[in-house]
Image (cartoon, rainbow, N blue to C red; front, top):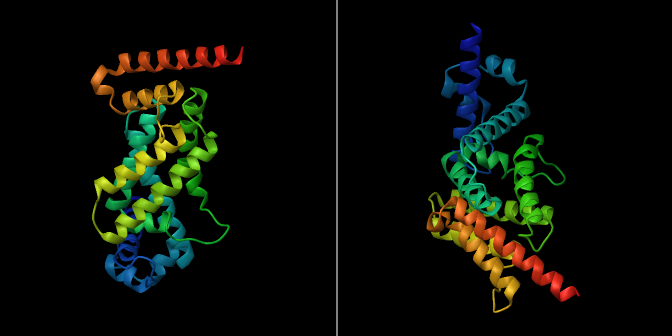
Length: 235
């Protein structure tokens, strides 16, 4: 077997395992069924993965590779909150398009255990919330903000996988609720600071209204006004 054919067989085994998992989320699957789907014998599967757990871990790793590849292909808006919004949507889309991989990546829970492959996308998320914190856009710490987003993003995605269909309204409602909570715009009122945050997040969510450059300028100006107001109150 050539190296190319070997890699193709391994990939087809991973895809077959993911398809079986997607067909019966949360249930066990048969290694023989995986082999039958690909048209190979059991020794071939053992050659590539060693055992069932090895196959599961390889499926999880491949799932995260696919997920990160999709993320790297998307462009940044230049605004961390808008990037969080876009990241949420791409996370949900990936789960709905790849339910077999996703249910293993985020749905197979073992107390105290987190697959090492989860660390990279989690760090990408924290880097965005850290940038938002540095810009004064958060009312909670960046790690807490990332935890809020990840927990709810996973919950919504798993719910939609169980339903077997997309629900853009539900996803958007939960997404905006979480972003409002971590940015302090959930209870926007006449208070100048909260109103400023509300305007900032509205502009960031719809950069097409003012234009990208103009939106960034508006955010900078309002942030400076908020800083000067805070300094004045402290005197």
